[in-house]
Each structure stands twice: as C-alpha cells, then as structure tokens.
Image 1 (tube, rainbow, N blue to C red):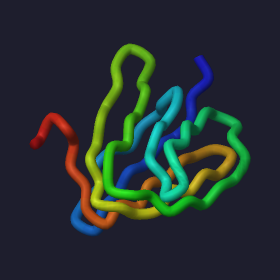
Image 2: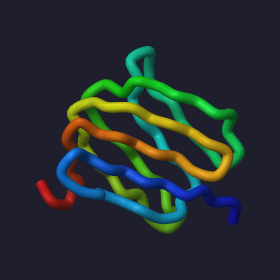
Image 3: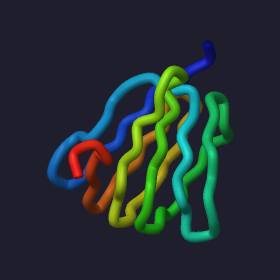
Image 4: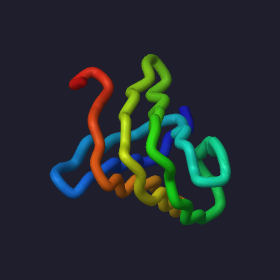
Length: 88
C-alpha cells in the first residue's frame, strides 16, 4: 500500500511516529485530508481531532491547535498540546 511518514509532536513529547495511509485534521479554513504524494502545504490547525489512518485501524489524537506541514515524504503535526484519544 502507498504510505507516508507521519510525525505528531507536542511541546511535551512525541505523540506518534509511523507510516500511514492518510491523515485528516481541521485547519482554520476547514477539514483537510492528506494522502501520500500531496503537494507541499503549511496549514494552521484549529483545536480538534487529528485522525491517522493506518489501514487496519485509525489512531485519533486531540490537539489544542498547531501547525500541519506536508512534505513529499512526510507529514508533520506540531501541536501546541496533544493527547492520544485512548489516553484520555
């Protein structure tokens, strides 16, 4: 399957690092979905969910806001603060 490296980090710690099929997050102008080979992008994120589709399951994170950076080979979410849904 076609995957892309995804890293989600907050000021406190790394929340996720791995290969994923897609990422969905809420930017200030609406929800965006990122697939492998997406054009480079820098977007400000609103508080809410970041969903990481791993194919067989989806990991959900809640962030207080932050930035989303897309490069050809990786997606980075820089969260102000963040939690894994399963840790709440």
